[in-house]
Image (cartoon, rainbow, N blue to C red; front, side):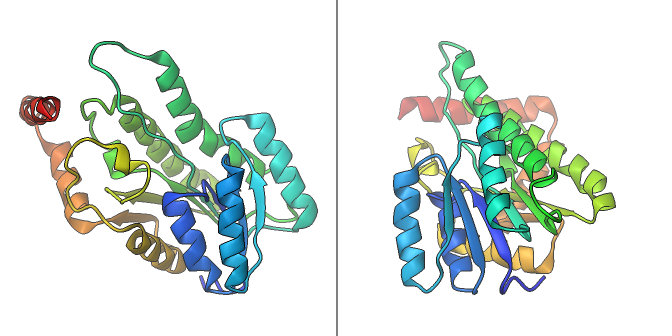
Length: 258
């Protein structure tokens, strides 16, 4: 798909991959609709993009709150007839404690990473627009394949997101909507800056936006990167549990010593 002139919605657009993708797309003469919980950062991004010659529509939206999502998308639908491409990028991650299981963190993680997708898809395929989007691209993660220590809620939520998007890919095909799953590895963003462990093949956020942009243009079913991490996660899935557990526990020991 040629994205020039297309109307593209990005959730979680204030920082990280969403912000970098918005910056990239703003140079391609696209019409941007940007969503984020952090309106102050979104306003700063809007000024930057406007100075580049494209004025985006911006909306404060917490994707974890269904009523808020439906209200915001109704407002968008009142302003625009359709969205051509929706990049559902909102996501959060918490490193968890070994001492306690914090259900509040689990709830928040699943509310954003899984239910946030569901709420946005519900709105995009509802009655707010004259026609559904051509592409819905949901951001999952290469961490969706195994339960990595201290990242259980995040890994589980991304596994759920990946499976949900896979199901949607076939369901929405009958409505003429292509569903794309985006699976990044480690990308340098404010979210990964909090990680206390070494992140192999850490990628600059601008490069990740370029890869996603090219993947959307080619309408790939899955956009996953970087290649070494893709291959590594595939191998990890094949490991017997005993071997995976050995490496996971050794990694955890090294992390705890820091």
